[in-house]
Image 1: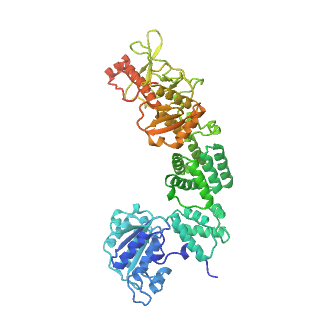
Image 2: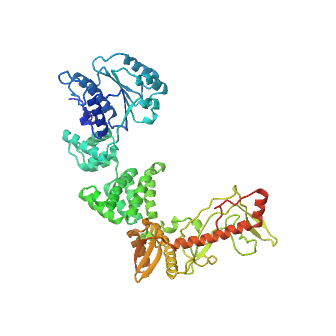
Length: 614
């Protein structure tokens, strides 16, 4: 019984026409051989298993092919039957030398190879020296090659191959004709696997080949090796379920279950699905890979439906349902989270815990759409730093060291450099800005009390944090705010309504931004017209969610969102009030006698932007 030859060796291409997925390289070499424009040094680069060694052997056969009748010359289509072609394929052609630079990387090995360059070919037309993984050579070995690489004998050709061309010295690269062999697309790999399995008379499922093609990651050799393993694992046939088990790929049904749960904000189902993966021993990274592939397809269907690739009937139904359940912006967000979350899995001790956090990150940004989700701890107020203040009825935060005593202005006014609060038009109040002061010290005064003094210098100032989005929560006690910049009834009404929606946690992050950044232009019965500047916020899905939140607040209306310049949105009103308070705080610090004394005596400066009203 003849020994078994693995598929990767049995189906190694022997001519340029059999090469798969490297059309650009094949075309360039074929034209060069046909026209006789032959370079003396070729450098093939690319990842593992894309055909670097195979191309070098075919090139050696093309240079030395003698033809079927023994009278042939240099050709782009070697015959494969002459002594030169047969011996090169068998690895025993005396004028074709392969050197593995990974294990022969010193100057002695290179010099031994170059000593053969002075002798003319024994059997063939050209001597061909092939150095694999050439980047592994030492610096002295490269230097020993330079002169021969630049001016080799006319009968000598060099073929260099590497997976890391950045490590090859520029002096060597400048002497080479470089070709980059690219990783192959999964579709190309799957098509080649179909031809190989048909030739081997092995039964297979197309879905199993797609799994193997994706797992190969552009390497045809890896794909054929995995196919060998899958044939043995499946008992002589390729079926999707056994191949998934062998690869540790995510269960397709679990993946669809997770995506469906994410689209509806069902966090409990997401966690239960991840626990099921843990029990089955499936790879967390494979789940994210599957989700990224599906979400790409969903995004294409949402943006350019006619360009979507055809799928089998089961996947088609799932994709259509998911395309309708996810908004376009949510699809992009989830794709980005899954893609970047893939890198985080290796940082955690437990990859399933890391996967849980990656997927829950999407729910943290998703707008609440069900009562169950609104009760989730992933709520709008948790997306804002707790330093921005608590809602009504919450216990006050403990005072910070050096900030517990309110300050008085030099003029004797009661203005304080502290956290401002905005009195809403409906009587509620919310803090606007929270940021650390410049460094403070407590100075004694005549009546025995203490007052805060701001020592401001480039060394003492702290960074400032601003937030244009008010936190979720109820009313907070604070001093009355100044009158709104615009007193139009619709603006006042819309501002107060938006604050109530935020306080009741009826809207999530994206819809909250739409409400804050939009201006109520007019109310025509049950039709309200909003104007917003950002096109990304003027999405129909976001307007529908805002309508649902307004209906729950007692306003069953239909929203029309138009693009345009908003001049008095809730966010702008809040920003104007914050700026007014900040201006008063800056004036208080600048007029403070202690601050002025520091500036006169020590040359201290108030760093622009280092103060904020607290």
